[in-house]
Image (cartoon, rainbow, N blue to C red; front, side, top):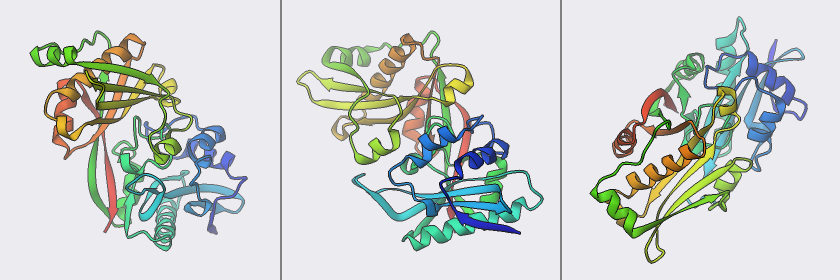
Length: 315
């Protein structure tokens, strides 16, 4: 008989075993360890054992699913109005589909009881509660197409498509920032500051990136006004498993009154050049497919689509 229960303190080594055996696709960090799960999941200040559902067959753990929430608008606390089952991992089993359905249903019950009015499947930039650096790349891209087994679980459970998210990559070998009249004018009238391990700007940023090495590029006007910033992170331990140095672009923001002036293009170009000189081989970022301005910006800088994922929503 297969039983479901909530997380217990002695579970991490066996959950790591499930991760290593489950068909999560090539974007899941391998080999998984309990120490990596501790850093990326259990150590988070908002971790709730009731949201991590475990499937057991006798004393053996054969699967788990993890439901969680994102931040409120001010990013000062958790907002339980929208929640998501971030992933489902099940070892090869004759009843895999039934186990997946039960785990997803239990996650939905947990989210609803906590107050969720909208239930998602997979993580995204606004819902990176857990697993940054363990699944998906530079950020959480919903459920990737290469994780076909997991996508099938959500589709069979009645989830529809809320968004498609593109994983974009750019190799930095030989990269040079674009040079034109607009870019030269920006260079003359602005200052670019590079900050390693910057102070986290919100509680949510601190909670989700603790233990992650950040680098922020701030673009200032001549009189010191902050015009925009771009935040990257050293994609460890994923990049270590790839055997190269990689940085992930988590966030880029340009002051609302200064957009459409080429500042984002300039800021990213300078940041990529600096990272390349530091020995970074690849930069990765993600963008919703409907965000055409972001995709156009990344295309201008030579980013190419490497993978796509689906953020699901319960009908």
